[in-house]
Image (cartoon, rainbow, N blue to C red; front, side, top):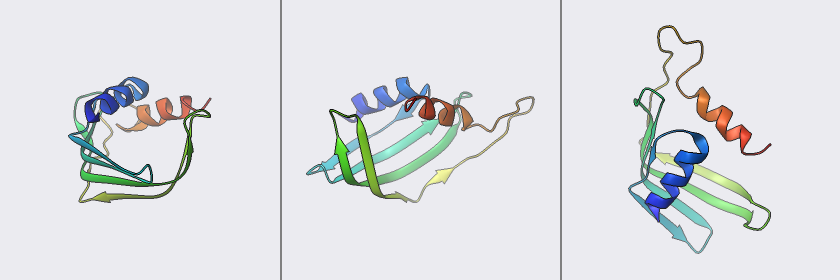
Length: 102
């Protein structure tokens, strides 16, 4: 299930995403263990041993999720601007993420 979610997110956000394990607790809490997000240069943007979300409301039919809380355990975040590029290393993900809601 974790690999399926990572593959889906990678395709949707045009980024390499890896998830070691996925835990879902009665559709109220979701935890991604070993979350890794890479930039277009295959360098780490985010690594978190644990990424937890508390679901407030959701509808699979209407395709929405409302979160009430997000927490990261000991995250490593690398924000960079590579030489010769105008954008920061994570901006491509924000563009792809916003496109999901258009």
